[in-house]
Length: 77
Image 1 (cartoon, rainbow, N blue to C red):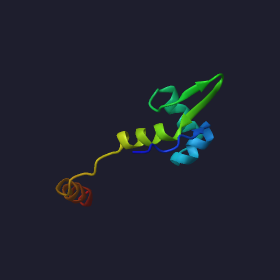
Image 2: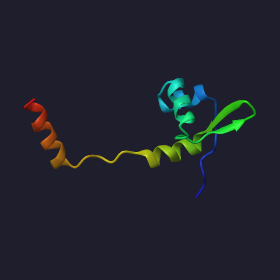
Image 3: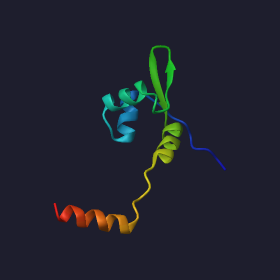
Image 4: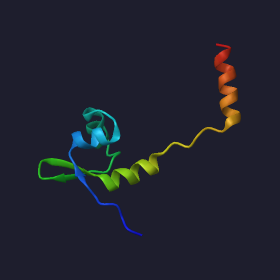
């Protein structure tokens, strides 16, 4: 199996890649909740690592029955 080509990105590039703001990326870096590297004073994020991180952070869908109950409760509010 061939691994995808790793592309090192700046904070701005990573924010665009993930569809979030630069400040959100900096916040996740400060919380150590996203994979990154320090290169001197610069921060770099790898596309391969971000893809793996996204797969691990994926939220599983809610079961249909629970969704129906939630919808019914919200309709009564």
